[in-house]
Length: 127
Image (tube, rainbow, N blue to C red):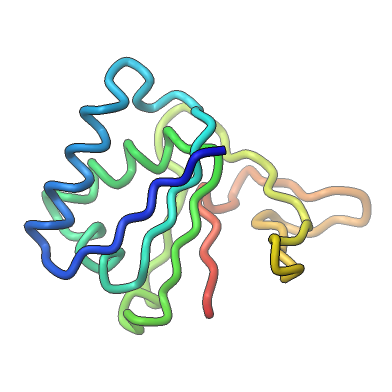
């Protein structure tokens, strides 16, 4: 799996980087690809602003996994990311990262599985 790491220090830099990645994907945009998107807290704050948000959502929906580290942007913790578009959220499940850190399910827990109808499309990870 390839990784797209976005770590920008400005709104313009974030816009340019997200736009470039969306353009690179071309026809594969908004279709699941074998990439993981990793974005830091400061860049996430810029990515969620008006005018940049659509690039971020398009790119996020194009990736198999998205990790948003919000430790650097406390005000971003007040915002919740919900699914958009016709695609229903996928089950993330309870698994482990390479560092053996548990990753909780993003859906509502039931005894045998998670229902993800109301679950966030994007798995948010706090440091």
